[in-house]
Image 1 (cartoon, rainbow, N blue to C red):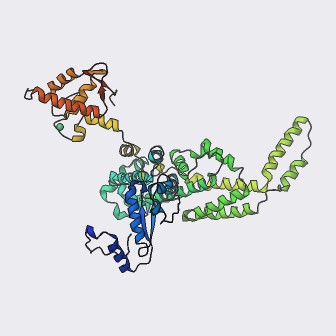
Image 2: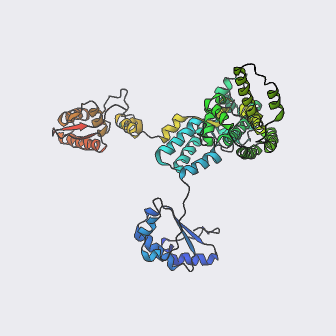
Image 3: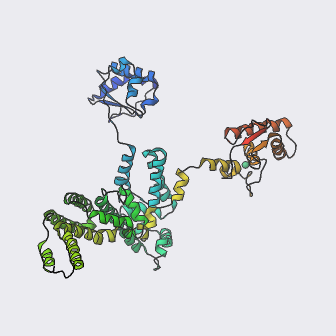
Length: 508
Ligand SMILES: [Zn+2]
């Protein structure tokens, strides 16, 4: 319910948030557009509130034309089970579905992340981790995007060099931006020291950055072309999604020699003329987006015409004629050999087969081999490539049990206090919270813990100078033990009344 010319100066009180006021406001604006009201999470509203709200809306329908959009996550029948008949009878209901979240994820990876205008290049390990997180936990695109944002933030804040990432990716890097400290950092990058050349100056850094940018653009383009070529092959040897191919290319230095790539080449031999022409057409669209690949585009368009005119029925005459002339077998074995060879030649002799082969060979030699290169082999790639999967896991994949153990075993890890700092993990200090002390003591015991012994041990730590009364120690102990029980580490023991049972094992 937003208006373009919203006046932010008006101070509205809470009592003004009602329909008569809203109606007046709507009439004043002279707006004739429909009002769209979105209830994002329909199920979260109480039925009575919804019924009342809709009845009120209905009263104003003549002056406030509105459309209500309800986000329903269960089934559309929920509308009928939550609303009264008299409310439903006033409504005109249409149902529509949104795509499953995996479709959105595919769109985001294909159209946003795996494009050269995305600010950071994600290493395959990062992308795979984010996708696994999506598939195994919640199917939430929102969480996936949060993960991507963490990647970008962490990459940019990691050091002074990575800040240049955006300038490299949109080709605005200039020599002035490379200050002395940044240049020193750049010269320390692994990709630069590995080249074993003399130290780079700003001009060469800019040149390398331009080369890097071009390589990334052509790499994305080549990945898309390969995807177009192999996406609907039987059993998808290289994967079903664009990102599968991206990951395969970047994780393997010898991707072209991999069995799955070779399998694809074999399967391409069974593509029909119609299918191939569609693929070539799509490929030309992709190639048009990158001016560096103009030569390849022109050649592909030339081959496209040849494929269009190629014959799929008639064999090419001269080669079959010559082979038949030489057919003067001296023995049965030789006759068989000749026939086999003839069949082999015949297969190649369809004009379309020849053109298809020529097309694939051309792509391999001129597009895939030179451009499908892992960018982690290129100088300065560290500036744009985020690959710290360990860091990302730390933020996204929580290990609650490990965190609780750390908190209880070494509270200063989270408190950042000096009073609880320990050198030995088994050390116990009176300054530590009581629950930490009972936790540490319980770690030393067997399956069953004697409450009396436990209390005594607790007392010796917290009451070293005998300043506390026995009742105070007991009270603190009881509270700490019940906290530990609440956390799920112990339970009451049925066999022995003065014992509890441990429920967890191991130190992790
Ligand atoms: Zn402390």
